[in-house]
Image (cartoon, rainbow, N blue to C red; front, top):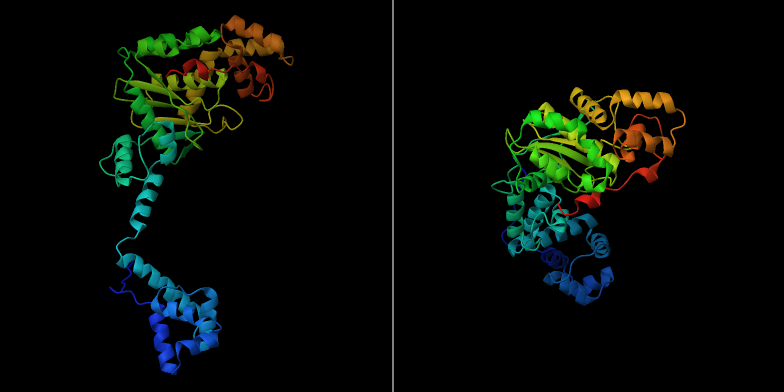
Length: 369
């Protein structure tokens, strides 16, 4: 039935040992001599002050014709009964802490300042987690379903992924933006990558998107999530694009941003917030992708470097895809050279180990967010 019934008053193995000694007509001194233990040790076991060790259990089993397991089981049951009888069992707290740790990566959330909680005050910690997940009690599941996409596989939603999306939502609600108009975003998105040409212009990304009615959020990834970005809607008219800066590289940032904006324009993420995992880099999967992800990938790549321009560049330049050629092409396209390098790597034209010095860092440009 899953419920163990225990006596109200715990019975110690020492009481049973005393009965065995009495039945044999021995004294405690006799038993001590037989098992090779001090008389005081036998006395303390009988009084319940000393636990039966494996060595003593073996000696008692040989003296009394029982098994060592018998005495060890009696000892373990007695100690557990004592714990329950005293009403001081920490098991309830252990279960509550286990539930907290399975609900969210709570230590990481505290470290990042996403929640204010003290793990020594479980009631306060549970309330903090409930507020963060927007649930009524710690036993509830967050009402935040989402589709986690990597290639054509819908990954299981994990506690860290759910926590990351929750933080995206919390942060997005603090941002004021203009009314979202799809047509304005559609007109601007194809040229947005030109802001990558300088750090000053790149810093303007959040403001430009806000003017288009799109909230831009940068939320660091939680350990082990491999989250690159997300598309979330606060309501039917309030899109949010989130990036994690899992990699501090301009090529990663711009491809992830464009990928999420492609989702917004397509209306993706209305029913289920979308988390994109492993979009860029050696762990990216570009083969067997879903139709939705393939569309977003194509759109993002074409906004960064138009497909016909990339084909012409490759036709004219291969196999000598050197630094100078890339710099000239990037200048002609009006984009950061890292974007060209990233697209060449993603297309398999150059290895991921080539031209890494051209992959400019960008995280510091958004450090105030």
